[in-house]
Image (tube, rainbow, N blue to C red; front, side, top):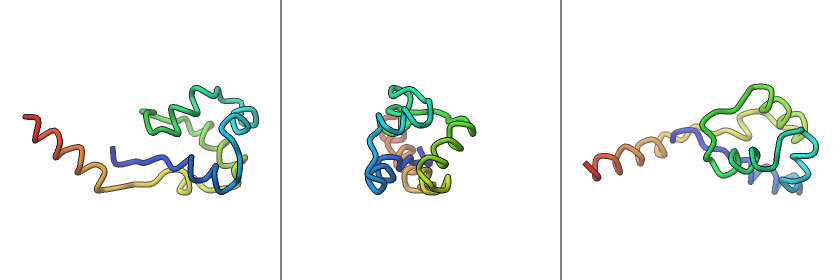
Length: 81
């Protein structure tokens, strides 16, 4: 996937646990965990807004476009074919 989530890095910089963030933004711990591990297929703008508000950051601090990440997935698909 070309979009990487760096929520773990931002949490570490803010010295905040995922549980504390969950309590502050009103998103379940399970859903934040899915987002943090990069397994989420989508994120609502309202969730992204709440995360940025509580973490005092910009969306680009949490989401990163990684061209190589997308290419690596394509290469592994070609190898499997």
